View (tube, rainbow, N blue to C red):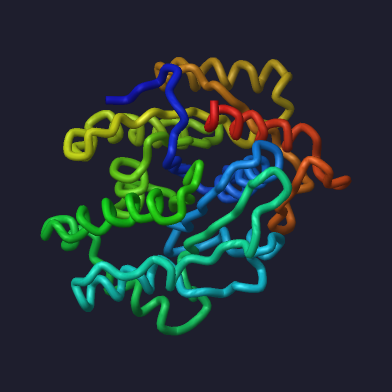
Length: 287
């Protein structure tokens, strides 16, 4: 069941997009920045885009930089697959040395050592269908979720999931989260794909198994000239096709086009409209 109404604070939030190019990973990073620096939250990041990891590039602009690159989710899963033993998360997680002013902290489980030759080989050995059919995949993901919440005590967990309809995305969207943030552009193919994702969440068998109800948040991104009539017409068309209100919009900004940026509200070069959009998403996650 999809709960699209007001909901309590979501502990585990997946950012998922059917198509690429919508600024999903940048949104995860900069929503995390707002949560840590402005809302003073303890944030735990997971890079679940295992085939094209990106969060580490943003984290290089944070106090986590000295610990990168680092073993992460692929190495963790490989060890579990090879030994059938639930590993110690502390060997794979990196965190800031001390809390920031106000108590906010950043902790991260990266995709892994993705630039090394062993990474691709290890990733190719991960058969999600086989893992879940055997029951080990479900067990491991429940363990991962619960160990993160219990051992690291974050206020919120943000998962960056890869695009498309596939095994990894199904886990990140239908099994692990309390809330799924769905950024999508206003093309017809992106809207149609997002409609499929919503239907998949609605029909997910994991909600019955876990007892967790998954909420969703639709975010149009990027929107060129959001106040123009063509943009408004595109929003109305998308809402009609999705049967849902699009609650938030992220404007297009050329400042984000050329490199990974981890902004804060006091960044002089940060585009105000973009930061305001990320703050609005962050506020929805904690209120």
